[in-house]
Image 1 (cartoon, rainbow, N blue to C red):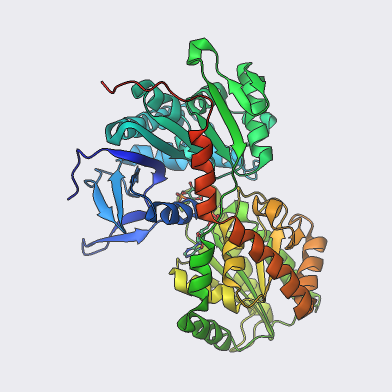
Image 2 (image 1 turned 90 degrees about the vertical axis):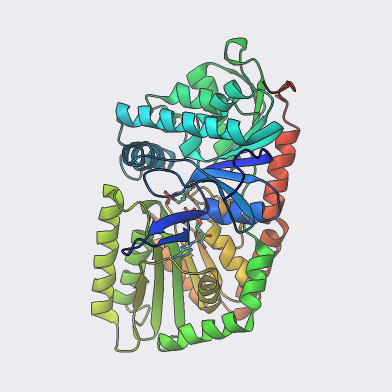
Length: 479
Ligand code: ADP
Ligand code: G6P
């Protein structure tokens, strides 16, 4: 067991630890990699730094004692059954998640969920105050922990606090629907520096401070009045990325290349292999891409016996109604498409509702002719950048929704509006029909961008801006 009195100069907090505790039917404890882009990115960042990761271990009940895993110190925070339902599934993922993603499904508002959200944020702030060394850098992540910056500042005025928003920050009109909008903004303004995916997200936040708190905003700095702490907070975009070199290296391994060939062979060596890899989330536009694919088959533009669409969907938030509905819809569409258009040994669709090791994902990326990334709204979308990182052969084509953060950088992708079914179908066909030279020209340009702006560059840039933030706390001695 790890020394629980140890203090750290670098502390990160995220709702989830990078591993989930899973107890099997025989009572054996296993640790599984947690889902999502936040974990992918921060695992790479933490592997090169000394520090502690404070977060939830993924099951309700008592928290395990702090432990070391993959060269990281992990400090679990407990959540009760009621808190998992109210703070995590409820307020975080059934109130904030829809509001921050253009209300693709309606947001639910419950005062009890808000109370639990506050209580869990208080627990995280206390855990951070306990593990941070004098003058430490504390980096808080994402929408689940928006009250933590101000709560931590009250407990520890000596630490530097940064917060990064992995998802979009909504326009004022949507954010303004939240009955607790002022408290959320005040929570965030406890930080010294706030990072967002796109410039538009930072602008939305700054506008919300002006509109809902009446604060003075000059450029990208909010001046927090004396009554609420009297310091300046900068908000700017710092787009997240992937570990380009490790994905590139993984995809070059002989066993991964072999596996890519094997995947194609096992699908009957189709002429065209399309791929989607997502958490099973309504923000990802999986229904929209299935509709476009089904119409392309129906209209005879694609031949189901010679085309396969592989959709890998990681199970996600499985007790929330909107996710249950999505799964039913997707699974019925997959069944219909296969029933109608497959041949024995040549499936029109392959659908896996499972998580896979990184090696298998790299092989899939390498095997796919067309990568379909069609979210209706997405903070960044790391899958798009992983695909590009794996294509050392400069092959393949990326079809990418305009409504992802990634589209701001990856201009050489085949950009689409997923709501425009005609446009989506046309773009998929353009990508399929592009010459090898055209695909290679685009892929080379995409790879240059992701190589230059990789996840280490992102972390260094965030931490530099946090260090240079105007609202540096006075260096007090810890009580
Ligand atoms: P989000 O954070 O919303 O899930 P991202 O595209 O930004 O979306 O990040 C998803 C991350 O999860 C990527 O690193 C991707 O490789 C990983 N991932 C997605 N699907 C799977 C899967 N089936 N098995 C393992 N990892 C997955
Ligand atoms: C997105 C969010 C993360 C979250 C992940 C997985 O990446 O930005 O904060 O951890 O999805 O979702 P989950 O609800 O399983 O943690």
